[in-house]
Length: 74
Image 1 (cartoon, one colour):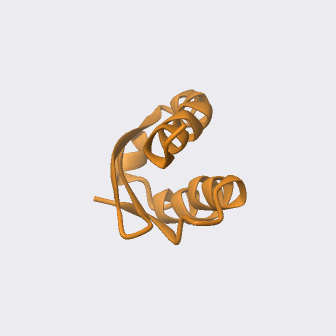
Image 2 (spheres, one colour):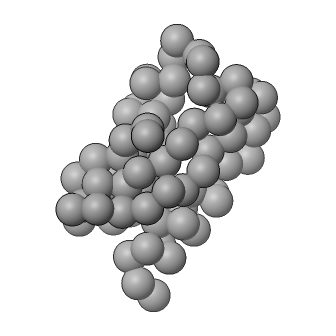
């Protein structure tokens, strides 16, 4: 399975948790080891969105795929 598909699958694993809080996440792409996502719903304007992204989403993806350098909200 290629990296793109692996990342998409990991994001699908995370989505229900964000949706449970009224938010959502959309996979945009990967460039130079950086995963691009778009936080939506309650996550889009939430002051804790950066923490959710870095401490939750990024940590989870980097733990499973060490070749990923960063997850960024675009």
